[in-house]
Image (cartoon, one colour):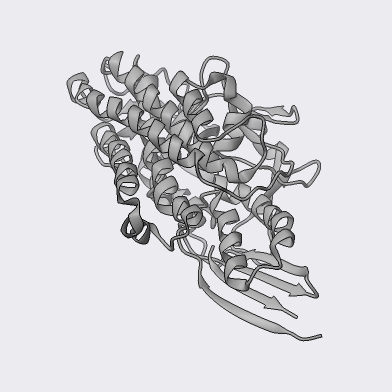
Amino acid sequence: MTHRSVDVPVVARVEGEGALHVRIDDDVITRLELEIYEPPRFFEAFLEGRHFTEVPDIVPRICGICPVAYQMSAVHGLERLFEVEVPPGTRELRRLLFAAEWIESHMLHVHLLALPDYLGFDDAIQLALGGFKPQVERGLKLKRLGNDLMEAIGGREIHPVSPRVGGFSKAVSARRLREFLPRIDDGIADILDVADMVGGIEMPELPREAELVALTHPDEYAINEGSMVSSTGREWTFEEYEDVTEELHVSHSNALHSVFRDSQTPYFMGPLARIMLNGSQLTPVAAEAAVKAGLRLPTFDPFKGMAARVAETALALEECKRLITDYEPPEPPQAAVVPRAGRATWATEAPRGTLYHRYDVDAEGTIVAAKIVPPTSQNLRHMEKDLWDFLPGVLDRPDEELTRLAEMVVRNYDPCISCATHFLRSDIERS
């Protein structure tokens, strides 16, 4: 038996750093580990001893791509604990801010992180130089729309400052928001062109089974409100989240893995899971974009994640248009808040999947303990499973091609590794 070790550079186009280790003996994978070596960031510890009013300013620093999700999971949970009645219009403005985040995050992933994979380029710069400049510029235009909306509503496009427990420190004017309507109309036309492009790309396939998990809501496509469901019929509340799921330490990762507590099996979150569980609530353009992008339901294939992101971007654009057209600023922008002791729990749909928060609070409103479970950490166990399922079918490829395909499997999840540490250098060994 001969042995050969191949060192491959850090895998690009994921947020954060980590490594993929694969050992192949006699054409059989004998070791496969996603090593998340980025150091833990201790945000849960930072929150202990802080007043609840500081939480919306601290938690968005966990992620520069999806800060709104962190703010919304926190403020909704604390408001429910404190029995806060937010002013009329607050709910709609929060959904609008969240939709803007979906637009910027999904378009970042589709055009800068995933598209180079499928068109054979190392990165988006090479993609633009290689004849796809209009497509890259169109993606950046859509992303800029999402960022500009976040700035208008939140006071800043990264780590917004206006969301508060009880509402907003300042509500954006209707006039300011309506200035976005022509750009949103352009974006709706653009996203259908993006869908046509994605639908014409030849992609690998991984028709595996998975237990899908997402929020669901009876009246709308769930983003920041709802209850938890899975594709096998499980249902649970936010209060039951930690009874249903469990976080596990693994020796090769600074990020915890999540499984269902009763079966110890992984689950799969994100845009594809959301559409599979809530597809009947897609808006008209979103449903059209899904078809154009090649998304045929039902499907469990993670390589359809890019098509799902395109469809959700269309939905978010339509929601932005609807919410802005009907918008009246909350008056006052923030309700009075009186803290009380107890446990606050909530989950929202970050672009990458369900984001769970739990806070134990004393009578003065001081955070006694906190737990934050990002979607990437919940997906990590399933990422490894997908690699175990997919790579045996491509072991005949050269190591460079095998590495590229492994990276594509990981990037299906659009992983936010820095968020998950509460990867990707590749190291392939053959013998």
